[in-house]
Image 1 (spheres, rainbow, N blue to C red):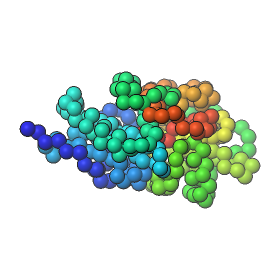
Image 2: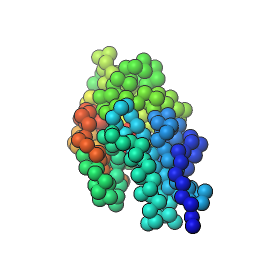
Image 3: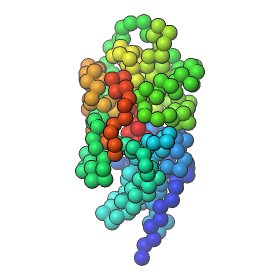
Image 4: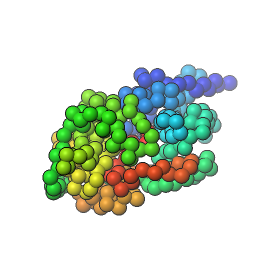
Length: 281
């Protein structure tokens, strides 16, 4: 009889999570495993069938009462045999007592609802090369690593329901990531990160106090990719963000639902032009 075992994944094993996510056409960042692991080193689980890895899932704990599920994958030969749901139960136990979020692909959303998740909004992935429309206004875009980290972390908390300093520090600092902030009248008014992915670059988060600030940041992030396409996961409840993506000629390519086990956290949705990730929130 086959032996199935679920263990905590080490940081080197997490490259397998990225490979499998790429096989699913999720287009992860090439170095995501480094900041992801820092977010919760105990929150990544690998299932092995007779020592062969066949399932993955992440269950990252943030603060005292929030968590996020991602990388829920069973390899094709292991599907339909109960191995995935066993990994799911381990992940949910790791997040017991917390409000849990996830981004669910369309064909899994009914299963997530059966597990107590409710849809809060949808993320629409827009991809392409922005048209190059210029931003107006007196906006200064600078390297996010040049401002005090405390201010950046505090700004991030407006848009994310829990502190995530370890993750954020590496998200800004990993080589190859382009992390920028927008300043206006001497105040921090926007923040964006682009990271190389298997196809083009992923942009997230993209926070901004206005369309012009989002545009200034996106133009600079896109320019750093030297003509490669970018992709952003845009919340459909931010109508201004959707309009901006369409105005810039970006095309919708993917959709998933942001779901929670409790009420959606109170965050500044109007300022979120793109989510940080669909894997860790």
